[in-house]
Image (cartoon, rainbow, N blue to C red):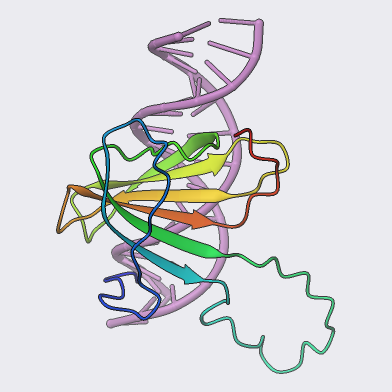
Length: 133
DNA sequence: CGGGTTTGACCAGCGC
DNA sequence: GCGCTGGTCAAACCCG
């Protein structure tokens, strides 16, 4: 799983913005990978003709940012709810969650094993709360 | 005092 | 069937 990211995917492009980060943020090279549709979602063993599947559109947005800090200030409040070590990288992976009311967005932060100077920030879900910005 | 952070343990899914 | 990885939650602690 997630052994390697799409090295050169068509969806990869330079992401510019978030310049309001007064932290050590180097918007030098950022790749953006968006997957709004469930990858191996598929059908559930045969029928499931029931429909009414309130499947939340879990939008997966991954950002590779060259930064020394893993917590970039995007204007949302994140609460760390777990830490796990990755086998692929000697660095631990941090799990964050939006502490805003009604916001069920999850954030995954991991350091690049090949380039520890890079940070992988993956957003899971969409914000459902007015940005305090 | 509140909220945020931390570590460990547990659980589920999948692979072998 | 067992083992492993990834992911989540809870309790306790620390800081502002």
